Length: 483
Image 1 (tube, one colour):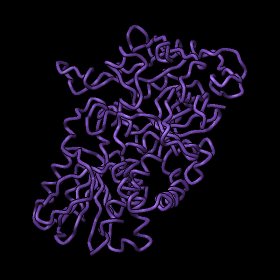
Image 2 (spheres, one colour):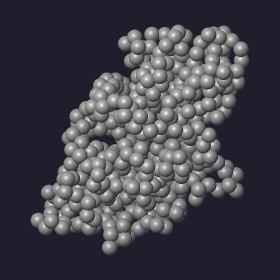
Image 3 (cartoon, helix red, strand yellow):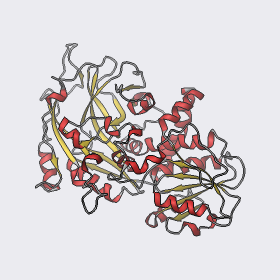
Image 4 (spheres, one colour):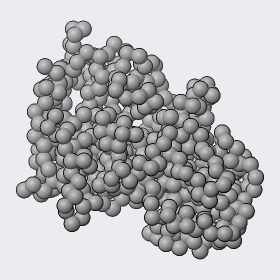
C-alpha cells in the first residue's frame, strides 16, 4: 500500500458550522505531535535526518483551492465570484517510513505567495498551461474532483529519501505544494549536483524548469543563506526570471534599441513582475544600451504614489486618465512597446482606441506578460486569445495595434539555451539577480503568516483584495518559523 493509500482524510471547509478562529484552534491542536524520523541501517529504509525516534506518523496540512469548473455557480447573483470559503485545509496523516523507492519526503518550511499564484488558480484548468493543478495531486480522489493544489515556490529540507543520490538534510528550493510534507518521485534522467527533477512524464519537456528541485548548497549564484534572503527569493525569483528573460526576448535579441522616440508602456506598473521588468530596462538605459528609450507606467489611483516612489518610470499615469498624459498626445513619431502585466480587456480596448487616433504614435509590439487583474473566478476562456507560443515578437508596421503575444519563460529559455551556453545563461541572470537582491528590500515589506487556518484566511482575503505592491507574502503551514 502506498503513502497515498494510507492517508486518512479529515478536511475542513471555512464556515460550515465552524468559524475560522475555531477552525484554526482545532487544526493547531491536532498538529502538536513531535516530528520523529526513523533511522535504519537497512538499505530498504529511507535515509532520514538524525532526529529522536518518537513517532513515525506525522500530521500533514495542505491548502486546497477550488477548481473553477467545479465551483462556479452560474445561477448565483454574483456568478463571476467563487466563494473563498470553498478553500479547504486538508488534514492527513503520513507514515514517514513508508516512502516509495526513488522518492523524497520534503519538509516544506515556507513558501511565497503573489498575484501569480492567484493566476494559477484562475488558469489551473486551461489547456495551454498544462493544468497548474497537475503539478501536485489533491490528497484524495474525492477532493481532487472539486479542488486542486496551487503550486508555490518555497524552501524546504529533505526529511527522508529513498533515492541514492539525494540525501536527508539537504536544503532545497522548488515548485512545491502549500503543505507541511511533500512526497515527490525523483527522475532518473535529470539528477545532478545542482538539482534533481520530479518525475512527471505527462508534461511536455519545455516545462522542465518547473520540475527542478534546486539544491541550495550548489546554487551560490542565486541562493541567499539567511531567513530574509530566502523570503525575498521566494517572492521575487520566479517573477524576476520571467521579467529578465522577457526583457531579453524584447530588447536584447531583437534590436528594439534602434532609433529614437521609443517608449515602453507598462500596464499594472506597480506589480512585482512589472517592477522587475522596468528595473532591467533601466539597467540597459543607464549603461547606454538603450540610449533613446523612455518608460511609462499605468496604474490605479491607490498605487500611484508607490509607483512614482520607485523612481523607475519616466512618467506614471492612472488608468482613468492616461489619455491626457503628456507623452500620450501629439507625438506621432513616437513608437511604443506595450507590455501588458494587467490582462485587463477594458484597459486594452481604451488603449487601442487611443492609439488609433491620428498623431499619437504607433504601438509596434503588444506583449502579454501577466494577468494581475485575474481573480480565482475568472474564466480561463476570457484569456485564451493570447495563449500563443513566443517564437519571437512580431512587428506589423501596417497595423495600428499589433496582435498580442504571450511570453512564456520555459519556451523562450529553450530557444536561448540553443543560442548560448548554459554557463552563459546562468552568468547573465545571476549578475542581474545579485543587483536586484541588493535593491528590492527597500520596496517591499515582508509579511509572514503561520499556521493552516491563518494561511487559509489570508488566501481568502488576498483573493478578494489583492496582495498590494508594498507587501511580500511569506506563508507557512507550520505554527511558527523553522528553527
